[in-house]
Image 1 (cartoon, rainbow, N blue to C red):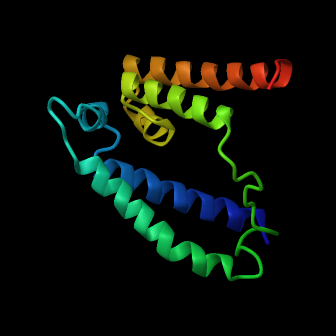
Image 2: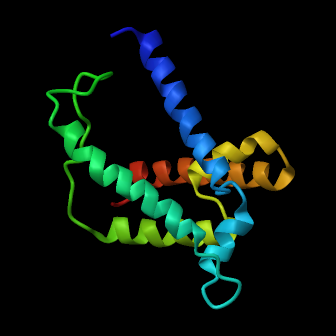
Length: 143
């Protein structure tokens, strides 16, 4: 399979994802923060966006996995680890705190870079720093 075809497919998928984030207003941190504010100005629309994504995934995944191999890769990359351990729980808590403080998770954050305002750039820099710090700690610390 040509690298150009893979790159074009990646570009198309990323563009579609970014467009979906924009149309659903998930690149607006106020929308996300209002979803998390269940005792205040709660906005349930993010739940519908997540439910839509889960529904498409739940329907499409069984059909995709019936194939011998993916269309644009040599094999399926399916996680072998399925148990919930303390790292996944602690990571989820840290992710949730960061999401609640900033109003962004990684997809919408990267999509929002097109606005290039100082808040987004600082949040993105913190995201990159946190990612590299975590990789360093996992490589050099006790797991």
